[in-house]
Length: 150
Image (cartoon, rainbow, N blue to C red; front, side, top):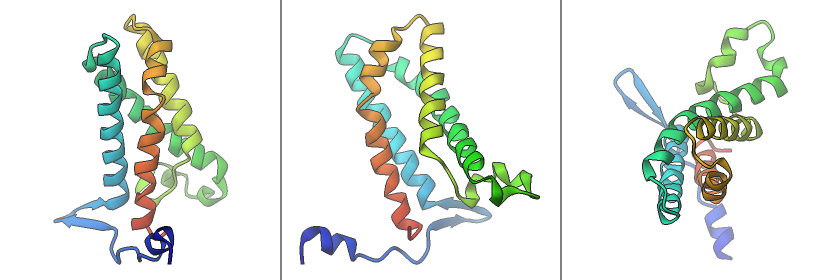
């Protein structure tokens, strides 16, 4: 059996959440958060090597990630709206699943560019810096699908 075949045969865990009293930490969300943190560190290092302040990346990432989450959920709801007909309040229930990466990328990148320009930062240079970090975060986050048995 090939290494890839061996890895593909590893079963997903039976449980995809950690319960801390009434609080449930879902493995998918934790893995996405880990991907975001790794991407921020990568972008900070790249920005620092170009003479930028790593704190710029943290400030931009805070709002860009939040916007990306909203955009990803909005994309999912818009492209799968039939699931929400008659129960539109569930459109905000991200814990029920459903994020669309195209919407997250669009909202996150646009937010980052707008905030960079408002702060007087060179948006094009920042986009160049974060370009490798975004797919890295996505790749790490996709490991969360394993926990969801997807």
